[in-house]
Image (cartoon, rainbow, N blue to C red):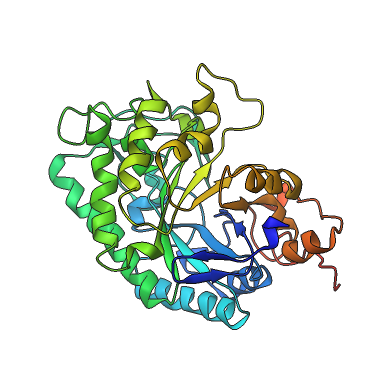
Length: 356
């Protein structure tokens, strides 16, 4: 079974091709990783690679309650508890570096959210005080961008100090990097707006900063060409993401991680709908595909050379021993959606394993 075969990810040998998706779980009160999180990740250390939940690179980058950060000494020390535990269990773990941009609220940091352009998302932000209308973000000035790039560099430094095996840049799902990519959120007229090359510039500047801390073979990038999340959209996603994939092809990255379009999505261009296929046309490095895969559909994706690795989200939430269950063809636990974004151990570390 290809899913269970080893894979060489740069200097890292993965014992299988099953990746644990980044999954926001809201279990970091005060933004500081903790022993409960260490237990959760360690339970899933048999994954070929774990990618952590999104970890904001600054206070302004936070958009949800109790998500962990990766910019202070206390956060570094908390993440060190996690990485030490995962490594002791034989696992491999990357930190996902995250800034939500306009998908935030002043409730969390007392400031106006920021974005490429002053275009608010539709809908409401969740806060512990209830749902609040999204605010119109402040359009970043050109001179603001180096400071944001520096925040990603700081996040990369903290991840290195915390003992991670690498980092992933969250360029998907309508968050800040993705907001720069897509025309629905980027209406700038400076060097960060207009052409696909200009709209990719922010990511490339972040990559330059992050790869001054980490070798490029330990850095990944996550993309979601099909859009949709958090109101994101682009006038020509095929052109935009073909360009992004082409420029990333020359960066010597660990991987590109693609969020596939939801099942049943239709569109004018099949490459737009099948996001992984679109990126594969222009990107020759390691490709991870994610979005609703079962072990059976994942195996077919590998057999058909659609991707090199497959990431699982909800299945890893509900099945800490997912790899062994796949190996044995055993039944899978069903995830309890009601506990995805709550607090405490229930629905987090208490899913049963085959061992009991």
